[in-house]
Amino acid sequence: MVAIREYWLVVSIGILLLLSALIFAIGRPLAHNMMQATSDAGFVLSKLDIGGIERTERKQILALLDVDAGMPLMSIDLNALQMRIENLPWVRRASVTRVLPGDIKIKVEERVPFALWQRDGKLRLIDVEGTIITRHGLAGFSDLLMIVGEDAPSHIAALRKTLELAPDLAADIKTVVRVGARRWDLLFNSGIRVKLPDDSGVVYNSISAWERFVRLETKHHLLAREVSVIDMRIADRLIIRVTPTGRRMMNGKEWAT
Image 1 (cartoon, helix red, strand yellow):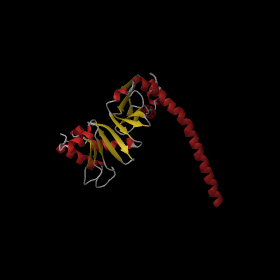
Image 2: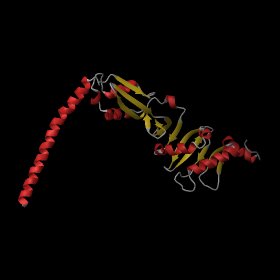
Image 3: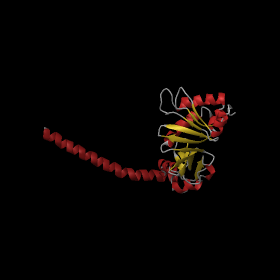
Image 4: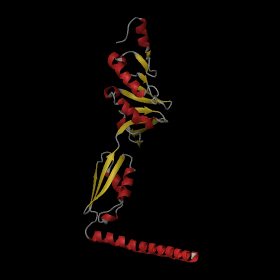
């Protein structure tokens, strides 16, 4: 009985392998015939619609697609086209769809430039998520925020959300420096440096320190005074370093206003 069961097991496996080979052999010409049928019915590429591009050139996308008018519409691999488009530097994401009878519609979402990242003496343009967009043609982005630090881009999204709590004040920041891979220094256009604490703190962190600074600035106008450094790293105290001019004014019993 054992020998009979083994015999039928071998026969069954052989039949399955034979059926698989037949399906593969029949399936390829069947798929080809189906594409030919759709082509004969008029479902061929006649129009390529590309939307959402501003900084990405249309010719860049066309060079990647490798499709021609008259191709059977169903033979075009939409996923492959999407992946090629999303490899372009300015493209954050793309969608590619067929629109019968003969259109391919491409919708592009481009990256939003946020800052210039300085590393090893070289600049790179990054988006709001910290992704590098390009290293070339940066002259037109000289008014953007400058960020400095090895790991700065991976933390820039969190910093951006923090600064958005007071956007008018944040707009006056010229440079942000990542210190020790754990906190930020903010350099304002006036030259004043604001030191934030470790951004991973539970009770007191960069968010609570920034909110505290906003309140102090609103009440005391610190950025308009003769100070060079405002240290916010300790929750229960404020350390201020005054400029030489400010020190002279203090020695003269005056306070810069």
